[in-house]
Length: 273
Ligand code: ADP
Image (cartoon, rainbow, N blue to C red; front, side, top):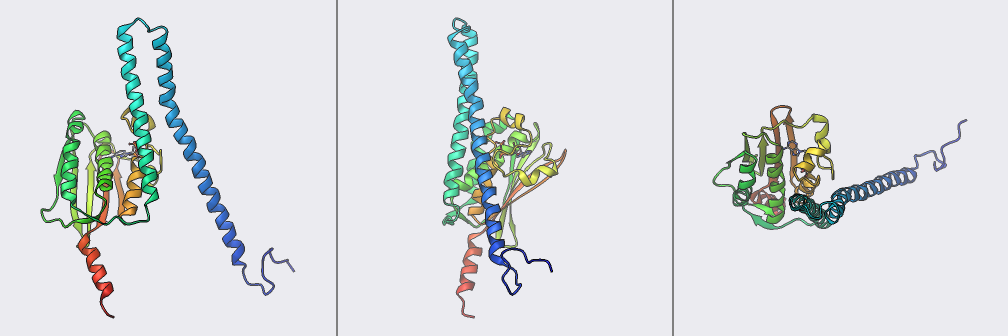
């Protein structure tokens, strides 16, 4: 007879303890690997602009010392690179702050239409420079959502900023809000750009994942925007959904529960059986 695997109890039942241990080890290795990859990515992302900065400093102290025109040009690049490092560090700080309170649900009432109106105003100049027209469409009587206004602003800022950056020039970007089954609201950011190949979509919210890394960097991206979006949406018990068609464009939808639906479910939970 074949000997039972080690850990099998004498009565032949499965040994669940061994199985749980194995899963824990796998999960632990995976999270350790993710941490190592993350540190490597951050180091690489910071090292690139730093290398460029120290190269330009050397040039400015040496060969370009007396060349006023070259100096202006190099200083402009250096400013761009240091702004890039700031953006990266700000995004990293946002991410770690959001992760820290991901399990506490934000409680304030947020007026989404007011928030979106402010956001569109803030990005108007950027849209104009990119030759993109931002259009909006939402109902007048939208009830509030429960959340953190600054974090929700960040969500839609990242999504609208991406739609402007990666959308098609001379085309429009649509910010559309609609109610879903009475209890939820969906905010869709729609662009008519080149779209995203299907195989990339499940990975878009990974930190530093980019479909076209060179293009993202050229446009000032940190590769962290959608990771931040995902964490904030999770904290709000919402959902992020991405649909895209090559050559036609992409839609990033965030669905959030409305306050009145939260109220209703609390009321019904309190009702006697
Ligand atoms: P980034 O700072 O690079 O924009 P994000 O996390 O915001 O980082 O987005 C990750 C990647 O997803 C981007 O680099 C880009 O390749 C792709 N992406 C995001 N939004 C869009 C969009 N609206 N259209 C096409 N590609 C997009």
